[in-house]
Image (cartoon, rainbow, N blue to C red; front, side):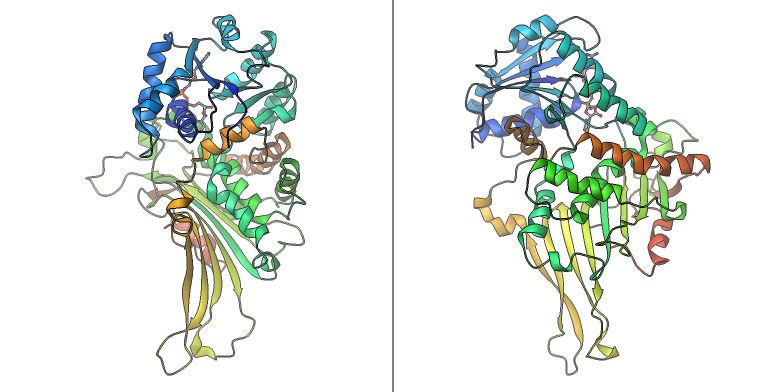
Length: 485
Ligand code: NAD
C-alpha cells in the first residue's frame, strides 16, 4: 500500500546503522512500490560530501546490504534520484540553512520525519536545533535510536528534553525487535486464537524462557559496550519488550496506547530480582587455538573489565495471571548459536492414567523469532507400534516461511516495517516514554546491586551456551534451559 509522500532526514546518514539498515530498508520499500514517487531522503552528517559522493555511498550500502532480492539496476538509479546530502553539525550552526532549503513545504510533503541515527548525546541537541531553525511543525515525527538513556535519571532527562520540543505522539523510540514479523505474530497467536489464551496463566504455565543468543562479540562497539553491558544493551529493552508481549493482558483494541498501556502494566508488576537470581557472564577466548577471536577483556583492552557480555535472570510478575510462574530471561554474546526463542512450558497433566512407565510429559510451545521464524507445539501421543501404552512427544511444527509459501513473500525487515509505520503515524510498535522509564526503574537497582557487591561476571568460553551458573539457576528449580537452537 503506497504511503503519503514524505521527506526523511537521516541524521547520521553516513553511519553504520544508516548504511546497514536504514537505507537498504528504504530501498526495499522503494522496490516494493510503496514509495509513490515524491519521497525525498536527505542524508545529514558531519563529513563534507557532494550529493554525487553520498549517492555512491548509498548505492554501495544498498548493494551490500539490501539482500538477494535487491532489484534491478534501473530501480537503484530511480532510488538514488530521491537521495541528497547535507553536511551539518548537530552541535553547531553549519548546514542547517541548507537543510531548511532542501525540505519541502507541508503541502508538497505532508509527512516530515527526522531519523536520529547518531550517538545518544546528540538526541537533545538535534531536537533543540530542529526547533530553533523552525524545521519542525505539528506533523513532524522524530525517530530515536537506542540506547534511550543509560539509567532512569538520564532517560527521564532525555524524555524531558524531547518533550519540550515534541509531543509524545511525534516521538518514535525504536526497538527493532518489535518490528520483527514473529514478534508481531506473538500478538496474533495470543489474541487471534481461542486455543492458547485460556491456558495462558499460572494455572497452566509452569514457566517461560526467553533467550536471545548471539554468536557475534562486541567488535566495533567496544567503547559503548564496555559502558553498557548486556543488561543495558539487551535486557532493559529487547528482552523486556518480549516479556511484555508474552505476559500482557489482551488490550481492548490493537491501537498504540491500548497496547502500550498493557505493556507498561507488566513492567510495573515485575518484582525486584533477588541477587541470587541473576547470573552475569563474560566471554573468554576459545580454547581452540585456531579461533582468532580474543576474549572480551582482550578486545576492550581492559584486563580488569567487569562488564557482562551475558546475563540470565529469573523474574516474577506479581499479578493475578502470573503469580507463581517464573520467567527466565537470558542473553549473551559469542554463544554457540544465533537464536532468539521463547519457550512456554506448560504444566504436567494433573494425573497420568497410563501409569508410571508411560513417563511424564508436558506440552511446550516454542516461538522462534530467528532464525527460521515459526512456532512448534509439542504434543504427547502414543509411541507407535509398542505393545504397552508408552507416551512420546512429537512436534506440531509451523515454519512461517513454509506455511505462507512463495506467495507469502520475503517478510519485510524490521526496519522496513518500522519506518513505514512512522510514515503512517502508527506508534503501536514503538516504545512510549513511560515504558522506557519503567524498564529503567526495574533494571537500575539490579545494576546498582551488583556494583555495590563488587560482583565480577563469571567467565564462559566463546562458542559455549554461557556460564555454568546460569544452568544452576534453572537446576535449582528442577528445570533446564531449552537448547539454544
Ligand atoms: P556511527 O558512529 O557509525 O555513525 C554516527 C553518525 O553520526 C555518522 O554519520 C557521523 O557523521 C554522525 N555524526 C557524529 N557527530 C555528528 C555531529 N556533531 N553532527 C552531525 N552528525 C554527526 O554510529 P551508528 O553505529 O550508525 O549508530 C547510530 C545510532 O544508532 C547510535 O545511537 C547507536 O547506538 C544506534 N544503534 C546502532 C546500531 C548499529 O547496528 N550500528 C544498532 C542499534 C542502535
